[in-house]
Image 1 (cartoon, each protein chain N blue to C red):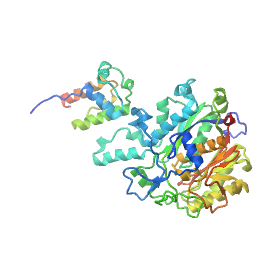
Image 2 (cartoon, one colour; image 1 turned 90 degrees about the vertical axis):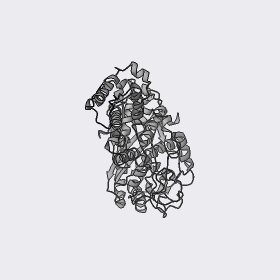
Image 3 (cartoon, helix red, strand yellow; image 1 turned 60 degrees about the horizontal axis):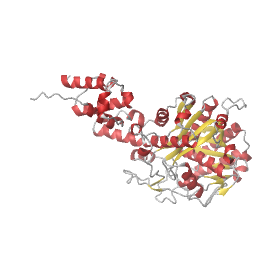
Image 4 (tube, chains in turn cyan, brown; image 1 turned 135 degrees about the vertical axis):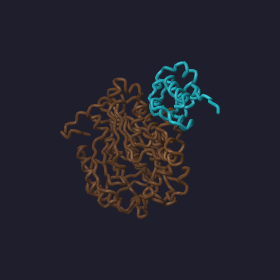
Length: 88
Length: 421
């Protein structure tokens, strides 16, 4: 059995922001400003909730409730990837 | 309008901008041209997924491209009915000579938003409910929580433009379109500088259409030329439509000071309720509403130069409206010119009275009473304008509206001094 660690990348987050909330953002910009609030990119709380839903469907598992409360891309990816890595 | 009832009018509410998204025009100018010419754009419904439904004729808004007018972040979280409202609000602001920045220059709290809505975002709601039953609750997008709500358009206009003044949604049936304008006028009287007020609906999607099939007043005639012919012996119900209009209303003196053209003033309004499908009782309800609107406007019946009728297209309802005009206006009720441009575009529920207000303001400005398309042989004692527009000096217009659930409303508009400038 493989124990491949699944990680959501900044590029994937940018794609999800577009799909779930109509927000167009350059992944490089998202990476550079990873600590800026999601609101600065035009993403609202319902948009982030939609991204959480997309990821939960993709990986077939629930993510921590903290995920939808994250304020910045870095915080969000840390929570999501932490959960995916530990399999929690 | 005088919200206090004291009889002393300190703040008058002016209409300074009109934005239209209608089956016969995506701009107020094209809308008026079509209305004045008495063109009918009623047609067979072409919307995908609706072909098999026993409602065949409607007024579809065609050629409307939301993505060219509205940012994607707003598009993904809104239904078509809100797209119409956002586009009409933009057009109304532009028509009023107000950029969003200028509108909130003094304070974002100086601009409010009021809309009326009858059904909300049916198409968006259907899509998400299909995900719910087709894939499961985890596949329903979070924006479902706001997009199909009938308050969505008020909220999104407010958010998109940064208008933080008093906001509201009037849910009082089709006549709520008039009630919303009256509410906006009261907001202005109470001190808010500008209110963006309107209504637009998008009832031509499968789920939304099925919801309407139970209305006994709905015309299922398959011929666009005969489907909606109020005030005739061939009346067989009404035809639904998409779209609506948004107005900019503001305190009249303020409008003068900033150099805006006062297109009209909102002079009086009243509303009553007589129950769903009790069309015979709507006679008394409508007459009472007209009385109330005239009283508030300080307007004698003879001052009414034109009536924009509700024109339900149901024989009992048409009779009730014709009789209500006489009940409320006396002999003038049989002599005053009456028109119903909506027979050429259909009834867009709460959007319909807004489109009638737009037509009334434009009619007063142009000195032309637009005709009632597809209607020729009147079987009631009213002077219905048919076939071609009738030139007339129009100072005061009465707009009437009724809803299928029993609301009746009347609104009196006075021509603005700016319309001759």
